[in-house]
Image (tube, rainbow, N blue to C red; front, top):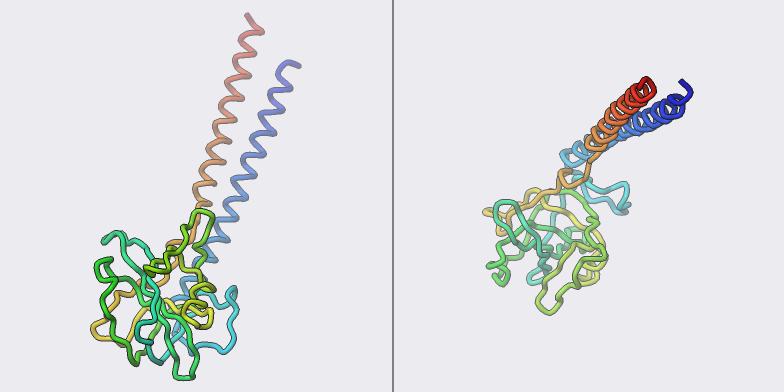
Length: 226
C-alpha cells in the first residue's frame, strides 16, 4: 500500500493543478467575451462628433462622424490582403475637417492595379471608427517611401508623413456615390480569443493525467500480486 501513496499523491496534485488551470481559462474566456461584446457595441454605436482630445486606450473603436474634405493627392497605400481578392492596398488619406483639423481616414481598399489611379478629392462626410492599429513588429519590412508602399498602419509615422494629427478614422460609410474606395470597416474579428482552446487543452490533459495515474496504480498492484 505504501508503494501506491507517492504516485497517488502526484496523480491528485497534478490533476488539481490541471483542473485549476482549466477553470482559470474559463474565467478568462468569460472576461474576453465580455470585452469583445463591449467592443462590438462600441463599434456599432451611433456615431458622435470627433472629440477635441483623444485617448488611444479609451477612444479606440469609438464611432464618429466627420465632415470635411479629402485632400487631393495626399494618401498612403498600405499593403494588405482580403479573403476574396487577395493582395490589395488600403488607402489612408489626409482629411481636413470643417473645424480645420487635419486627420487621417482609412478609406478602405483598392486593387493593386488601381494604385496609380487618381481618386477625386473634395467634400465628404465619413462615418467610421477611431482606431490605433498595433501592426508593427520585428518582422515588419521597412516602408518603401519612394513607391508609397507601406507595410503596416503605424498611426504616428503616417501622421508625420501626411502632416496630420495622429488620429485615424476607419471609414464604415462615406458620402461618395459610388465610392471610389471599398470600405473595410473595423471589427473585432481580428482580436484573438484562444481561451476556449486553452480550456479544452487543460481539461483534456487533466483527463489524460487521471487515466495515466489509474493505469500506473493498476500496474503496480498487479506487479505486487505477482
